[in-house]
Length: 161
Image (cartoon, rainbow, N blue to C red; front, top):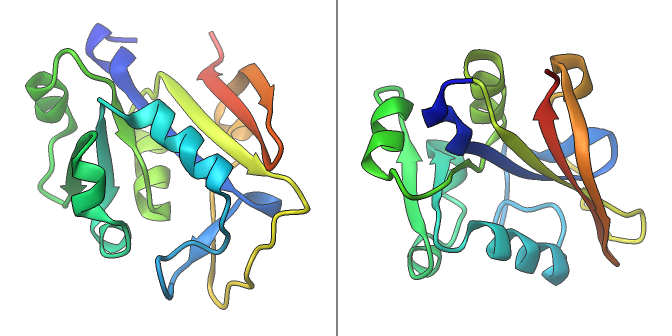
């Protein structure tokens, strides 16, 4: 892996069957609420760079997030290499949505994927047009760390060597 890509990471929270959202979301776009998982996300991304696709960006509290991290919206013209060069001291996290996750997993070496898997007691709203996160094992990623929390299990995946 090229050195610059060692800082390219991904973070995602999934429900059952790797559900990540609804193609036509409502409210804040999330199908669940777990304060514990939101705090985990914040602990990982604070002080770093977070990247969101245009659709996902419509539903995140952009101004609130900008207080503790860089927040950028990816477009078709975005150049990930330029973003990595602009922030040489920070990790760069791809934060969704589904199209962003799929594209970058297929086209770039992601150093680490932080995946939070919700436990069954966390209420998840039904998605009318469900969106799913790809199966990382099928993409040659393996779990390198697993941590249990009350509402979720946190996994860190890396590409198999």
